[in-house]
Length: 619
Ligand code: ADP
Ligand code: MG
Image (cartoon, rainbow, N blue to C red; front, top):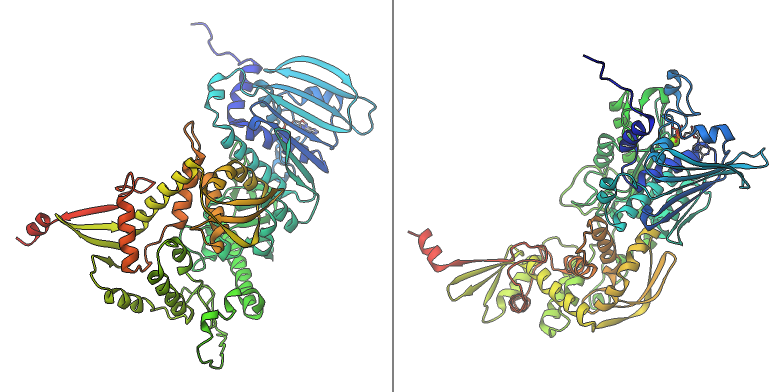
């Protein structure tokens, strides 16, 4: 039989390789940014159109390429970064496979312009699907500019597989963040559809984090520094109380390369143990420097996974240095009284006789020992709780005196920091006459109906009520807002601002009034009637995180998402005691809804048990 094995032509091999290297526009962004860094640039500009589907361009002021190198750079396995296999063990560059440019050129229209410092003129090359269309001498500044258009033009399946612009842009921004965080000494600019999304000057690490994630990030960073024989750690972790609902602010860099490691992530989570609420994640921005000989970054084509020789030691060092930093920080608030607003005397405290204040510092307090009875800031006995009632209070603004009164009592009790304040509250409830509802474990509302019994999940029910109300406001566009005494200024990162811009109009329809909406700041002068001022920033943060997590499809509705997110944030929680009036009001409002039986996220809001059901049980 004749021989049947053939060598694949280069352009086919390149296309196959491209499948591994280029999954989406963000992969191109990553490769081009990394090449610019390897070229020792000091300023790197990323220009993107339509989330990279139309254009991705990276312009740098690095060392550029000679005519020959410019042409060679598009060949597979063409790299200036390693010469022998040994070099693999002492890598100091991002790239080394010599695959990226060849792969990208196989599946897009690429234009390269490059010039080295000492040369008069530069080189321009155009390639479409691995085919060189032109090569010319051009006038161009020192450095390199590569533009990539019509990505996946010759692989329609891939092109169709791309997600919405929102999703693709988010991936691009993620890559941009990772690269920019790893290199604060390089200035970065990102422009999307003609407007500047990021402008990051050369700076120190803290400033870089703040420039990316917004001014409010500054106060939440706790430095982590550690140097041992095998490992150097530097960077920041977020204070536990600023923990986020998403993992968007978790960054590990090993030798300035972003990596993902569930194992090391676990080391950090365990250092935060006992300090975090369930469902929230610590922020961290950590750089690990290790001997390149002790790691293997070659195991994954996109190089975000890594193998360490001695993971266990790294784990232990990382965990203990994060713990140490958190421990140091936990002592700080004791000395820094100015910061705690909750220590201000409340007005309704006036009538009380004062007693000598005592502050006991528990010197042996260990923040990492989980102590259920103590609040998070534990360690000294005057820790006041935030008023959980505040939010609930204003939800029933429409309701008259009785309910509100109870709440004042409630917050007062709260203020004396008695953990067992619920008994008082329930006593109150039982005094009320003609009781038709009953609250079980501060979680379910039980009411009798003709056929038997109705059991309502208070949190879900309230979510449904708020959700329909919000939808109504946003669609008929006549929300009621309450004017704030002083405008509230909030800071957001550029990517958060992008999202907020898209939601601005809908937010206004729910009752938000914005007086400024620019750069990284928004100023709020009015909020929906049922939104307490103190909750605004939490609500917006929750909203951003909900939008970030949503993978928008074609029938994605910003209004709906907003209503869902706000109703989730604002709804009374399980554990919240309700007066009888509040219980009844909730039951009535629920059954006035269009779809009372499910929450906005399709969970059951109530169940019924008939007398028959009971009869059967007693047989
Ligand atoms: P790798 O980065 O793995 O070497 P690439 O395909 O990404 O492979 O790039 C091939 C070569 O092209 C690089 O080794 C480098 O010499 C050159 N090159 C690519 N981008 C740039 C740039 N922005 N500035 C200077 N040289 C570059
Ligand atoms: Mg490269």
